[in-house]
Amino acid sequence: MLADYLPIYRIRVRTERLELRLPDTDDLVALADQAAAGVHGPDFQPFKNAWTEEEPLARGRTAILWNLNLIAAVTPDRWCLPFVAVHDGQVIGKQDLAGKKYAVTREATTSSWLGRVHHGKGLGTEMRAAVLALLFDGLGADYALSDCLDGNGPSEAVSRKLGYRPDGIDHQVYNGERVTSLRWRLTRDDWDAHRTHEATIDGLDADARAMLGLA
Image (cartoon, rainbow, N blue to C red; front, side, top):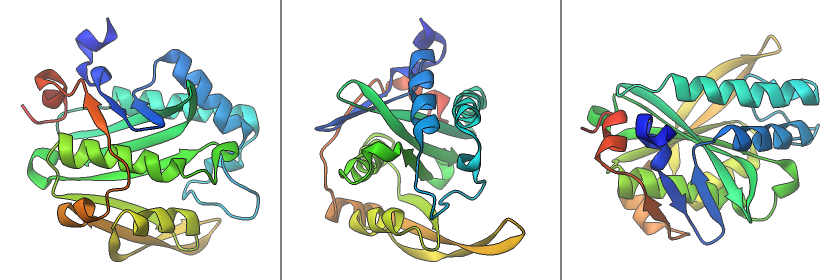
């Protein structure tokens, strides 16, 4: 089985409505379908690399290839786990968790997107809460990090609701112009004080932890 060679595939995080898991090929196709159908409205671009401005088929292809690349690049020193979020048996989006020399830093970065048809139902908050449970409860983190482009109100609202605090800014270039990215940081104490969803974690065994640098 794939998980015999890549034990991170054993990891499952479940909340009341969602399951997070690493995608198999069928999940990648379902994720591509969500990307092709649309991730956000035409009036705001929430992504720094603007991949969602491609045509539907290209968006879906990008979703597949990018996530395969992330899985292939996992090492104990640097990793990104591109979980798909599953609701009522359907892949609805993705929730990433990325760490660099995590065994030392004890901090990791979250990022996500959700198919547009699933917006406005609290699922984005629940996705983030699920992966934060994995990070703090499962992996023993001290901090969680996130960022969003200035003006991305929904992402900022999720961060604030879950207890993140402002952590400075970065500047990016988009279409030849400077844009501002807002950084967010969540401490363990703030996470404990702002828990919104309980989560269960399965498959985070010694072999899976070793793939993440936690031998």
